[in-house]
Amino acid sequence: MKFFDTICAIATPMGSGGIAIIRISGEDATASMDKIAFPISGKVFSSIESHKMTLCVIKDREGRVIDEALVVSMLAPKSYTGEDVVEIQCHGGTMTARLIMDELQSLGIRHAEAGEFTRRAFINGKIDLSGAEAVMDIIDAKSKLGVYDAASSLTGKLGSKIKALREEVLSLAARLSATADFPDEIEEMEDSEFLDKVGAINAEIKKLIESFEKGRFVRDGVKASIVGRPNVGKSSLLNALLGEERAIVTDIPGTTRDTVEEYINMGGLAIHLTDTAGIRESEDAVEKIGIERAKKSLADADLVLFVLDSSEELSEEDIEISRSLEGKNVMAVLNKQDKTPRLTIEEIEKELGIEKEDIIPLAVPQNSEKIGLEALEERICDKFVQRENKEDEISISNRRHRDALVAAEKALLHLKEGIDMGVPYDLLYIDLEDAAAGLGEITGETVQEEIVNVVFEKFCVGK
Image 1 (cartoon, one colour):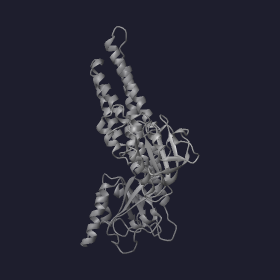
Image 2 (spheres, one colour; image 1 turned 180 degrees about the vertical axis):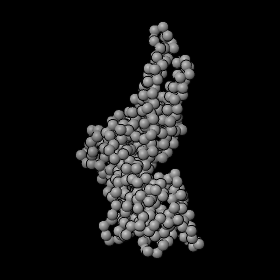
Image 3 (cartoon, one colour; image 1 turned 30 degrees about the vertical axis):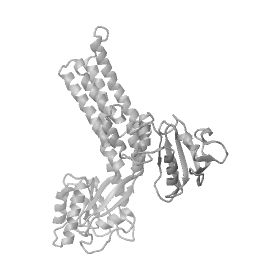
């Protein structure tokens, strides 16, 4: 891949729309516009002030008008890529943008590869690797909280934190190196002082690692599986959460024969809901397939909504299902509260071992007030996100970042063991180097080329 030629790509989805945006980056970006973009003011495009939107007539190489478009140049280094950048905002449609792209390529401008604009921004120091990954996270975000989380990294919040921790590690390494080189001039640190500094750094790393579990739910959403025996109200619960009649609801047990899947946003969190077939022994071939799919959905779920019928006593089927949920994150939905209750919260807590705060009384009858739905949604959100995020609180949601932090933590723990064993300080230098390398992988300061390639191959063309 070349990095210093001029590239172009359509940055908006193909198809009919209000506008299509074509992005050009490289040293010939502005000069090339003089051959196809003609400002209605009569000026030469390359003479127009940087960052000033200009109405231009776009012509092909034979002088035929393709479109009238707004064009802006953003001269280096004040651009997304750090190079000269031009953006053409033409009318949306399948042909207009393609015709303009044909003209640009006839001028020797190469079609950009996937993620190449952001990759150039990374190479030119406009963004670190964690910020580059945040660009893709914003594009892929499924919820409001996912957007906010990615935007925090995009603005450098995570990168700044990691760089500060890495500087502290490098500072310790420099102190060890200087002590080894100039023992008569620089006093060796006491073990207690060294351990305090290492401990403080490791505490911050540990906090970031621990934030991953909730961070990944914010980024990727929560897989929630609705399970229970037939006719306890699983499909009614799905419909109530969606606010529409998505699943068929009848009084006949076994109506749901297959999984029904939908995405909803709950408190800014994306929830992938799966309504499953009622789990029971059955000789019906179709129902048996549905039950097997229900069990597979259960195995993949981050959260299980175990629906119980409060108007009936706890059954052997309920108990059997409960046993299959061991080790899962379970909430009991005590449904049909609009009927005479025969099953209590206390009984579920005692017999099934589900904590009281995770048992939600509910009634979702059709065409009437839904009891307990708000409490259920609040409890789900409380399980997976912090309701009151502090302004300075930083979390991670990227598995690559977590793995790099774990490597850094492991190196510092090994260093601590060395100090406890009385290993000379100059031999502990390698552990500090490993910790710094792990942290540097997150921002891209010490990352291998293969990892960079993996990051950017996930991008779309034009970004």
